[in-house]
Amino acid sequence: MTNILFVCYGNICRSPMAEFVMKDLIRKAGRETEFHIESAATSAYEIGNPVYPPAREKLKEHGIGCAGKTARQITKADYEKYDYIIGMDEANLEDMRKRFGGDPDNKLHMLMDYTDRPGEVADPWFTRDFDAAWRDIYEGCKGMVAKLMR
Image (cartoon, rainbow, N blue to C red; front, side, top):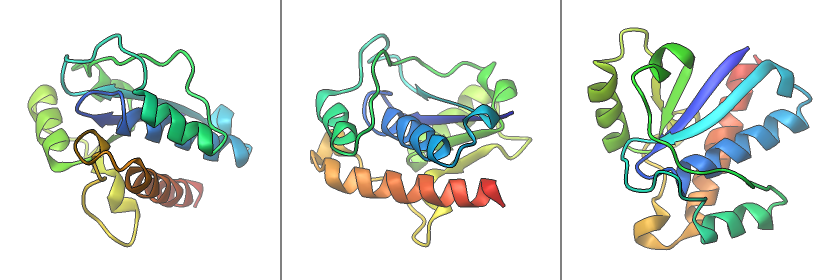
């Protein structure tokens, strides 16, 4: 079983979108029994809140549901539990390094590192551009799936 955790600041936009896009891609590949996929936040601001409505709508436009998902914060134990811990931006990676006490097993990565255009996933919380976030997340998840399936 490969365990993947997607992480953003609040766990209500980018990381849950990545969680459910990845689950959908893995399901369509017929490999869902080989993966455990979740998402979490670096902050505690949104804990217990559902996926932000515009993010839910963007997933729904693509036939992907996210019912029942509520925000949770990363814990130190997550470092041991997950094989891949994927941040959406540099601030996420820095927050995770602090929380986990570094990255001795090289588990921390940026989602866009799985694409031809490394960098940060567009943050729709500030830009309100959920189309740009979708494009980044979908491309990153597709790239990650391709790498994992090799």
